[in-house]
Each structure stands twice: as structure tokens, then as C-alpha cells.
Length: 227
Ligand SMILES: Nc1ncnc2c1ncn2[C@@H]1O[C@H](COP(=O)(O)OP(=O)(O)OP(=O)(O)O)[C@@H](O)[C@H]1O
Image 1 (cartoon, rainbow, N blue to C red):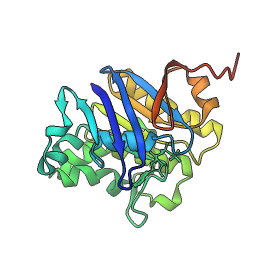
Image 2 (image 1 turned 60 degrees about the horizontal axis):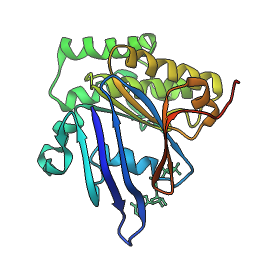
Image 3 (image 1 turned 135 degrees about the vertical axis):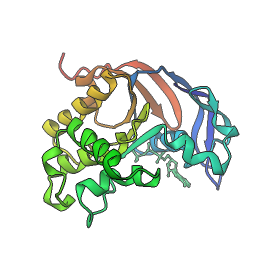
């Protein structure tokens, strides 16, 4: 599904944010990406979503070499990726429906087709009853779930989340993780960047650990939260 081969990313000025990183995320796999602040987590996600390009090395999604993807083809690659952010970037003066529908509007959907898909996505995150609300009428956890519904509304095979539980208390974080697990159980590949070590330890998924841009660990978490 997703493969990094010896990927290095230097930003202008020469700072090396990622240093020869290699890993493979299988189709239908769920994994965490962790590491200290500045370790390179967001940079790694940006290389997958083509916000940034590697300095050297290659990134593949479903066998497609992203270095061969031209600027004009970027939107087509992004269709296969659902992105979820910590601050969920909702349009605050638009309804929950409009926020979730946005990716479909961009793709040219309208009418019943669009409504059906938006309702299905909101149903999956448990927010069908909030469809007419404005985001400010929702709690932080609910707003995050709207962000997830928007990310999955065009049914991408890969979900990327950057600190999706950053502002949430442990119970709400667990709710959000349950939503990701439910998508994973129907075959969606999921990669979640998080520095919440206790959450990672509770979840017991494969964890990729970055330190100063190097991948220093790839395996089950061993933070020992509930041993
Ligand atoms: N556009 C940029 N130009 C120059 N340096 C950058 C740029 N983006 C990130 N960096 C640097 O690259 C390093 C890695 O940043 P990145 O955002 O990937 O880290 P992170 O692990 O996601 O950190 P955090 O957990 O704090 O979000 C940092 O030292 C950062 O300052």
C-alpha cells in the first residue's frame, strides 16, 4: 500500500528532517508513527500526501512512484488519501453537512448521490443527528469526528492522521481511535502520527518511531502503560 525506500528530506537551508527512512505499510494495516517534537512525523506525512517531495529516495503508494507524479496529477493521487489534522480545519460558518460534502463537491458530486454519501460517512462516525449543526455547536471530539467523516467521504483506501487526539482527553481519544479501528476493520490502511505514548501502549499496534529524522524502531510499542 505504502512504501518508503531510503527517503531523505532536507529543507531549504539544509536541515535534514528525514534521514534514509524505509518502511512498508501493508494494504489493510494500521500503524502509529511516533517520536519527539521535531522528529519528522509531519514531514513524513507530507511526503505521502505530496505536500512535500523527498530530496532523495522514493515513496510508493499502491506501486505508484510518487516521484513520477506531475503537479497536474497530484489531485488524483490525493483522492486515495484521507487526511485528518489535529485542528481539523473545519469551515466554521458552514454546516456539518457542507463540511463533509466538500471533497465530493470538488469531485463533481451533487444531489442524492452526494447526500447519501455524506449521511453514510456521518453515520460511521456516529454524528448523523448533527448534520444540520454548525461546528461551534459541537464538542471538540465531535468536531474531530466531522473531520474524520470528511476524510473518508470519498472512501479512500489510505487514512493519514496527524495528532488526531492532540486536544482531547483520554476517553475522547479512545473514541476517536475506535473510529479509526472500525475503518481499518473494513480494509482501510491507517497511519496515525501521535506523541501520546500512553495511548499507543494501550492500542498495541505496530509503531514506527522517529528520532532526529531516523527511523529508530519499527514494532509493537513497549512503553509498558498497562503491564
Ligand atoms: N518547511 C520547513 N522548512 C524548514 N524546516 C522545516 C520545515 N518544516 C519542518 N521543518 C523542520 O523539520 C523538522 C521536523 O519537523 P516535523 O514537523 O516533521 O516534526 P514533527 O515530528 O511532526 O514535530 P511535532 O510533533 O512538533 O509536530 C523540525 O526541526 C522542523 O523545524
